[in-house]
Length: 122
Image (cartoon, rainbow, N blue to C red; front, top):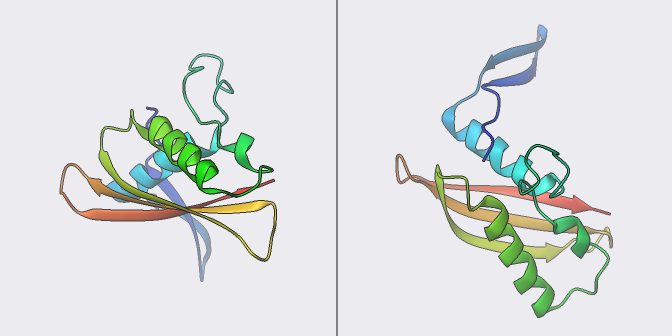
């Protein structure tokens, strides 16, 4: 899996600044990139990314959730810094073309739990 850049842009009282990203922020960024990049979008890494965008306009069902969870697991499998623990998928009731994913994982280095949310929009 591709490694993310080691910097974070922040807005503060003195404007926008840049600081070194923590290890946890780098991992979350790499996971977000793997999930939101369409598989095949990167010519030199055609296996990188996911097919999650293909699920957006399908009827929400248990089988859809199972397929999406499998796709999340496949897309993040090469990220060796974490162990995927759980994936929750819910439709957004206020936006019919949006799905919210909550991903729980464990950092392999520290065994610390982590989580993140990702929204998919049509």
